[in-house]
Length: 333
Image (cartoon, rainbow, N blue to C red; front, side, top):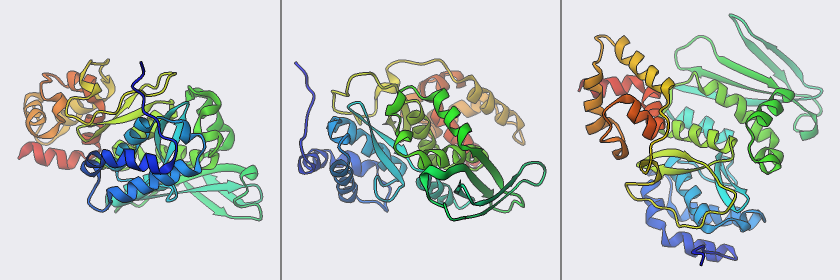
């Protein structure tokens, strides 16, 4: 007998989400309100026929992920509730990613789309630049030719620029897409394309925890996976062929602690390198003691090595690396 819950209209969805209002409130930053998030989810539900086929549990889980990151779904373009064969997935939009970077106060970024007939110049090298003058076909989705993103760290002299032709975006999607034409890019290609190049630029930008969580969610959606919240950190979960049938858990010991995956050796090496290059160097034992008591999520409190932390929650290490300067200050006390 299935324990799957169903709803048939926006009001019923609102009632269901309202019963888990506490989970949404606990995830939200102070400037967002649970009632507004629930109304936005109802609007998404009412305007997307495919979303109505998703389990309300997966919609709730996606809404909590959006709340944790601080993004509003739907009309604002910050993030989207995207249906994948009966399961809802929260997908950050490029506007949301740009906003999260700008909110750090340490860098800014922007994106653009080029169409047939536009004046477009793009150069790489020691002085990269792009120049874009919109033409008569600007905004016509059938005329899209290039997408680009620019980012600049406060105080730097040079922007970071990434530009891809549409053909490269399509090759990128086809390489990583695991869900065929159910991939959200088939319905929202420009949004997807602009986000792809923006994510390349964000690799060189300072990250807040919220921005790092959004990048994890974006990477998960690229692979057709869903996400959940683990002690304030967004983690990726593989999506099976069937729908989500159990109500999501928001307790302190979620799926991520049930079993350990293969450690992310790249992030382990990065952390060790940063510790060794600090002035003066930070001992691994010192770092682990800080991590278990102050720096890391509860799910990693018993980890004895950096590899073990990476196997449980590599995203939390990535978030720390993205804000390394403040992490060092905290470690040194």
